[in-house]
Each structure stands twice: as C-alpha cells, then as structure tokens.
Length: 597
Image (cartoon, rainbow, N blue to C red; front, side, top):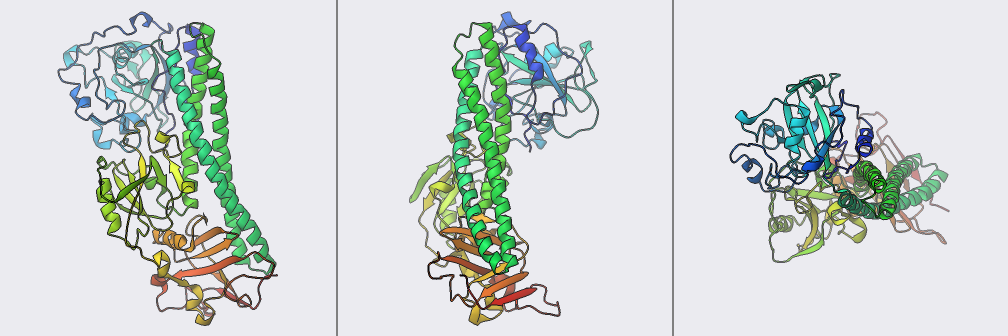
C-alpha cells in the first residue's frame, strides 16, 4: 500500500481565523490533493467555547464494545470512552478522494472483511451509524459529522460519503478512482456537498488549544526520524562505497584483458551502488528539512502570542509533509539495503506487508539470548512460519541446522513471524533498527509494542559446509582439471548485486531465489566481497596462468570464482556446444593462459 498522507493525530492549532484558513494549503507528499467542491462554514472556530465540555449525544447501549472488545493498540481500536468530551474546536474541508480508509480501514463495520491495515498501522475508522441509535440520528451535515467525530480520541479527520455516510479516521489515503466528483448534497443541508457515490469529502479537525503540546509531539517525532536517517544513511553510504570501489577497480583490471562478461557485471554493481547512494542522499535531504524545522521550533516560546502560534502551525505543517516524504524514502532505502545484503523477501521481512497473523507475546525460553530488541538483521534468511512465540521460533531454528546454521533469528511481533539467518551472523553494521527504537524500519505505524522485530540467538548444531556445499565451481561441468583456477562468468542477473556477503552468504542468497538462481559469480577485492546471482550462464573466462588465485608479486590479492548449483545441473554439462542444442551451456568460454600484471 502506498501511504500518500500520514496525518497528525493532533491537527494544528488555530485560535485565529487566518491561521486555520491557511490549512487550505495542506498537501499530500505526492501533491495529489484537490480542493473540495464546497468549503465548510466560513467561521473557522464556531465551537471554540465548547472545548473540553461534555458532549450531549444519544448513543446505542454498549456500542463502545465494538472498540473495547479488541483491546489492541491503534486509533479507533484502543479502548476509550467515546462521546464524553469535546476534543476538537473546528474543521475544514481539505479534499475529495476515494478514501482507502473507508474501503480497507474498517475493522468492525460492513467492510470488515476487506480490512487491510492490521500489519501496517493497526487503526480503524469509526462510523457514525455504528454508535448513534437510529431514533437519535439526524439528517447528515458536515457539522453533524464533525460534532460526532470530535469526541472520538486520536481522530484527525472525518469523511462523508454519498451525502450521508459519516466516519472518523486518523488519516486518509487517496486510492485510484474514476473522474466522479463529490457532488452529493448533504441530507441535512442541500447547500453543501457531502461526498459522492464512491468518493469522500474529507475534513481536517482542529485540536482544542494544544499548539504548544502539538508542536512538542511533532518536534519529538522529527528528532527520532532524523536519528533513524542518520544511522540508515551511514550504513547505506558505506555499502554503496564498498560496492563502487571494488567494482571500479575490478572493472579496470578485467577490461584490460578483454573480459567483457566480468566488466558487464561490475558495471551493474556500479549502477546499483549509485542507486543506493542517491536514495541515501534523498533520505539525508529529508533529514536536513526536519532539522531546519526542529531548529525553528526550538526558537518559539510565547504561545500566547498569535504570531508564535502561526509560526508553530507552519512548522507542524512542514514537519507533517517532511514525515510523509521521509517515511516513503526510508521504505525505499530500506528495500535497496536489504537487496544489497542478499535479502529477497523485502516486503514480508522488513516492510511488514504480510498477512495479519495473530500476534503472540514473547515468552521465556531456555538457551535463547536476546541480541538486540527493536531491530532486524538483513541478509539471506529462511521463513520458518508465523504465529510463533519466541520459544517456538527458537525450536524451529534448532530443528533446521542445515538452513539456520549460526542460530541467529529475527522474531517479528507483527504476526509473530520467524526468520532465521542462513549464512553470516548478524553484526552491528547489518542491524536495521525499527522506527519505534529510533531506527530505519517502517514496521511500526502507531504501535511500538506490537509491530517491532528483535534479534535472538540460540545454539544449533553447526553444519560446517553451509549453503556453499550445494555449489561446485562451474568448471566442474566443463573440465574438472581447471575447477580450482580463477574464473569469471556472466549471464542474466537473478537479483541485484550483493555486497558484504561471503561465498556461503552468496550461496544462501541464491537458495532464497530458488526459482531463478542457478549459480553466482563471487569477487573479493581488498576484503570487500561482491556477489552476482545468475539465472543462466552465457560467457566465461578461466585464467590458467594464475594458479589457484590472483596472487601476483607486489599486487594486492583478489578472488574471482564462478559457482553453479549442483541440483540444477547434476550430471549434465556446461561446456559450450556449437550446435546450440545445449540450452544451459555456456555460449562462449575463453581459456586465458595468463594472469594479471
């Protein structure tokens, strides 16, 4: 799901009319908002005197049980006492959209079977009709919907569909739709519009007298996001630099001897390194924006001064926009980092877009060590299942020593999902911290107690050979006497270039791409590892003048090895066949009776 707008739970304060009307300029990060066809009442705060007063609404008996029966975190899901206190003192029309929240964010109402937000944000919309008894319902107007939603905690917006369908929501998310407009008049006021047949008129609500507190919340969130970007950008730039430096040097060396297959692979690595760097720079730019807003916020003091309140609202609007942009960029950067580490199930393992499995609380387990809480370790991993406790996950890890060799595993509170590392252990550089802990993952959208990951370790019987035991040098299928010689191979890539993984890690990454990967090319240059997963073999060079490694006098050592998966080729051959009848064979294989100067 592409979250287009992340709403403030506390909408900006507006004691003065000009300040509140300025929110007409509020835009989504994707700049897709359009002005609603008709604006609400021209007086910005007709309800100013009602803040914190008791609300007078007749509601269905026990209607609140819809929310309290599922006491899990999230706006519209948390236990609360609705309709007791006025929490908002103004509203403003901001958009006309087909709202994803109305169709996919209803956990309890008519659309509950289409509810999709469990693993993403754990929030739900709240319907007017679900809580107000039929005999007490009034014909719907913008004002009537506002007077209902302003008493529901943590709701920043309300929407009206088809002239009468009122609902409260913590945020709204435009989705693809037709060209229809919000042209349905309100049942109770024919001069105003209340949505359309499929679209919602969306209104932002203004929080009662909370500018200073609202700014503090936004300022704190901005600082946490900046900290997460600092760590994420540092790691991404390091990975990009390692990949770029190794690829540039090796490309020059192999280009000098006409090994076009190797130089082509290394060019792919340079391109991907640039992609990773540019996305890190995008994240850095957002962090700079947030820093500017934080600096401005720290300079504000007298919140009784209308001018200060106005500045604070502009800062909050800026932070809101930067947060929306930043979370989108962070998701993209996290995905690229995971691919560079050999991860292949990025959305499931990191972005938490898997099915909403029931969550189990962690339990104590003998012999299990918590390495890092609120973290996730990227790299080739194996999915062991969902709905597990930590103890059950640990037991699954120990039962598969061939896959979970080192005993490190990620346990996700979202669906209690269990993944074990297949090759190298987690290390500090590979930690991807969850936003709940001030880090980079976008797995917690509103609940840091449930949607987080942690790294654990349990002792397992080690399989010394690891994933690499399933792979042989490609020359094994061509001419066994040369299988110890340095070799390069090329073909179509099965995944993005990988940096920082050992040969065993590359083999594990190939295993996770089980349907597309048949082998891989591995380089080590100056301690920096590069790996390319291949879906076929096309060209290759094997260097018989180097002995078993690229070790030349007065030259730094580096390694070039080509591996093919035993289960894919068995007793067949990879030797070039001029007839073209061997589809899996190399199309061209060059014997280079030389090494490097």
